[in-house]
Image (cartoon, rainbow, N blue to C red):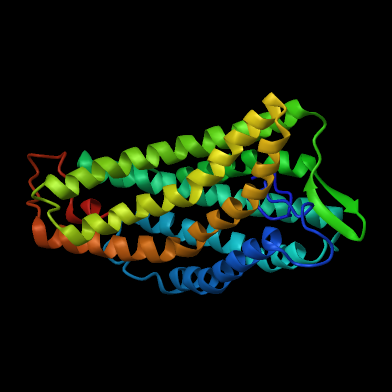
Length: 318
């Protein structure tokens, strides 16, 4: 994301490729996608924060993660009008704003991804291993999530600069060398693909539990849980794959491949924002369905002799 060329995070976007002054698919398609994300995502995340739908059966940790996800997504989406305007026109807000907003968006996107990761591991531990997460301190977990997000956003504060080309001004990264660019791209791709792999692992095992276990024998829940994994992976794998291709293009000094990556970053980067748009709908709906199945399929017997069996509220944690 720090490669953001067209001034929106994920940072591999490229407004420097936009012809002046007309619109074309390189800027128009991402602008349309981001506009839809803003229109749908802002009300959805605000509704989750204010209404907290279907949270009555969740644990305190689950509620905190859901709230953190909505807040991080909302922070990211609130900045989209500026990026959309810049896609179609030029950056007019100064270098300080360029650095600050790029860092803010990148930090919020990383916060969202780390929260999804934490929620996935929580579901895996609670449902597959039948263990409680009550011992986890939510304040420490949330602090760790945002600490990692801030650390990962530092490079964009360092490399983000303004660049003028004819009548256009762009907020984009300026690297001191190809090695620096490769290091940034490779770090982002490694972190991103590692998170996706672990999320996929958690939900594949959860899917098996839902499909084959008597406890979660519910097809609707299976479809909902699968949709979370599917959406998260489909919306992020193309972007991180393009990052890997970008690293290969730089190392091999392949101009054709790098030009392809610059164009693809516009599309896959904008597409990844859809995840912030649909998160409130996927997680809110799925949480309720998992809770309903828990109550219907296995009203647990709270036996003090078996202290490893979680209570009904813990099992219904998302």
